[in-house]
Amino acid sequence: MTNTLERRLHKLEEALQPKPRQTVCRLSEPTNDETAEKWAEYRQQVNEAVARGDFVIVVAAMHPADRPRIEKGATYCGTEFEAQLIEASMLPSERGGRSLLEGAIKGAMGNVFGPVAWRKGEA
Image (cartoon, rainbow, N blue to C red):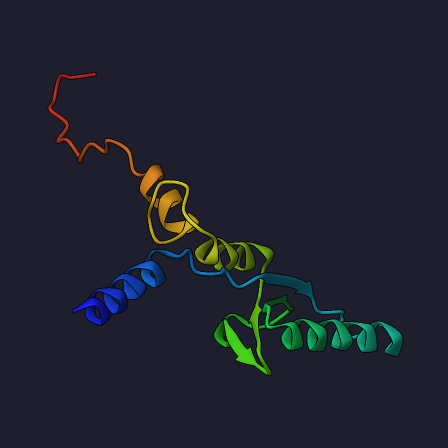
Protein backbone atom coordinates (compact mmCIF):
# COMPACT_ATOMS: atom_id res chain seq x y z
CA MET A 1 0.00 0.00 0.00
CA THR A 2 2.86 2.38 0.80
CA ASN A 3 4.40 1.77 -2.64
CA THR A 4 1.10 2.64 -4.34
CA LEU A 5 0.82 5.89 -2.38
CA GLU A 6 4.44 6.77 -3.11
CA ARG A 7 3.95 6.17 -6.84
CA ARG A 8 0.79 8.28 -6.90
CA LEU A 9 2.46 11.05 -4.93
CA HIS A 10 5.41 10.95 -7.34
CA LYS A 11 3.03 11.22 -10.34
CA LEU A 12 1.24 14.16 -8.72
CA GLU A 13 4.53 15.93 -8.03
CA GLU A 14 5.63 15.44 -11.65
CA ALA A 15 2.31 16.75 -12.96
CA LEU A 16 2.48 19.85 -10.76
CA GLN A 17 6.06 20.76 -11.70
CA PRO A 18 6.15 23.62 -14.18
CA LYS A 19 7.11 22.43 -17.64
CA PRO A 20 10.22 24.06 -19.07
CA ARG A 21 9.46 26.48 -21.89
CA GLN A 22 11.31 26.11 -25.14
CA THR A 23 13.31 29.24 -25.88
CA VAL A 24 12.47 31.13 -29.06
CA CYS A 25 15.12 32.49 -31.40
CA ARG A 26 13.86 34.95 -34.03
CA LEU A 27 16.18 35.76 -36.94
CA SER A 28 15.91 37.70 -40.20
CA GLU A 29 17.10 36.06 -43.39
CA PRO A 30 19.53 38.23 -45.38
CA THR A 31 18.39 39.54 -48.75
CA ASN A 32 19.59 37.88 -51.94
CA ASP A 33 22.07 40.69 -52.67
CA GLU A 34 23.86 40.35 -49.31
CA THR A 35 27.48 39.22 -49.15
CA ALA A 36 28.52 35.61 -48.66
CA GLU A 37 29.84 36.51 -45.19
CA LYS A 38 26.38 37.71 -44.09
CA TRP A 39 24.81 34.49 -45.38
CA ALA A 40 27.44 32.36 -43.62
CA GLU A 41 26.86 34.25 -40.36
CA TYR A 42 23.08 33.78 -40.73
CA ARG A 43 23.42 30.02 -41.38
CA GLN A 44 25.72 29.69 -38.38
CA GLN A 45 23.17 31.45 -36.15
CA VAL A 46 20.40 29.12 -37.36
CA ASN A 47 22.56 26.01 -36.82
CA GLU A 48 23.57 27.15 -33.33
CA ALA A 49 19.95 27.85 -32.34
CA VAL A 50 18.79 24.46 -33.66
CA ALA A 51 21.67 22.74 -31.81
CA ARG A 52 20.65 24.48 -28.55
CA GLY A 53 17.10 23.20 -29.02
CA ASP A 54 15.57 26.63 -29.56
CA PHE A 55 12.40 27.12 -31.56
CA VAL A 56 13.75 29.03 -34.54
CA ILE A 57 11.58 31.60 -36.34
CA VAL A 58 13.05 33.13 -39.48
CA VAL A 59 11.59 36.21 -41.14
CA ALA A 60 12.22 35.83 -44.86
CA ALA A 61 10.93 37.45 -48.02
CA MET A 62 8.50 34.94 -49.53
CA HIS A 63 5.36 34.68 -51.62
CA PRO A 64 2.04 34.50 -49.71
CA ALA A 65 1.40 30.99 -51.08
CA ASP A 66 4.64 29.72 -49.51
CA ARG A 67 3.82 30.78 -45.94
CA PRO A 68 4.53 29.50 -43.36
CA ARG A 69 7.00 26.75 -44.09
CA ILE A 70 9.23 24.63 -41.90
CA GLU A 71 12.67 23.61 -43.10
CA LYS A 72 15.73 22.28 -41.31
CA GLY A 73 14.32 22.87 -37.83
CA ALA A 74 13.25 26.47 -38.50
CA THR A 75 9.84 28.02 -39.15
CA TYR A 76 9.90 30.60 -41.94
CA CYS A 77 7.50 33.58 -41.92
CA GLY A 78 6.91 36.29 -44.50
CA THR A 79 6.52 39.20 -42.09
CA GLU A 80 7.67 40.31 -38.68
CA PHE A 81 4.02 40.33 -37.54
CA GLU A 82 3.63 36.63 -38.36
CA ALA A 83 6.81 35.90 -36.40
CA GLN A 84 5.45 37.82 -33.40
CA LEU A 85 2.19 35.85 -33.55
CA ILE A 86 4.04 32.53 -33.58
CA GLU A 87 6.24 33.63 -30.70
CA ALA A 88 3.22 34.85 -28.69
CA SER A 89 1.55 31.47 -29.22
CA MET A 90 4.49 29.83 -27.46
CA LEU A 91 4.76 32.20 -24.47
CA PRO A 92 2.87 31.52 -21.23
CA SER A 93 -0.42 33.30 -20.68
CA GLU A 94 -0.71 36.05 -18.11
CA ARG A 95 -4.37 35.14 -17.55
CA GLY A 96 -4.07 31.39 -17.10
CA GLY A 97 -4.84 30.40 -20.68
CA ARG A 98 -2.82 28.22 -23.00
CA SER A 99 -0.68 31.03 -24.44
CA LEU A 100 -0.08 34.76 -24.46
CA LEU A 101 -1.70 34.94 -27.90
CA GLU A 102 -4.88 33.28 -26.65
CA GLY A 103 -5.03 35.70 -23.73
CA ALA A 104 -4.59 38.69 -26.05
CA ILE A 105 -7.35 37.49 -28.36
CA LYS A 106 -9.75 36.85 -25.50
CA GLY A 107 -8.87 40.22 -23.98
CA ALA A 108 -9.55 41.98 -27.28
CA MET A 109 -13.08 40.63 -27.41
CA GLY A 110 -15.28 43.14 -25.71
CA ASN A 111 -18.98 43.77 -25.75
CA VAL A 112 -19.80 43.70 -29.42
CA PHE A 113 -23.17 44.95 -30.53
CA GLY A 114 -24.80 43.41 -33.56
CA PRO A 115 -26.06 45.30 -36.56
CA VAL A 116 -29.17 47.39 -36.06
CA ALA A 117 -31.64 48.20 -38.81
CA TRP A 118 -31.86 51.86 -39.69
CA ARG A 119 -35.32 53.28 -39.43
CA LYS A 120 -36.47 56.07 -41.66
CA GLY A 121 -36.63 59.34 -39.80
CA GLU A 122 -33.83 58.50 -37.29
CA ALA A 123 -30.56 60.34 -37.39
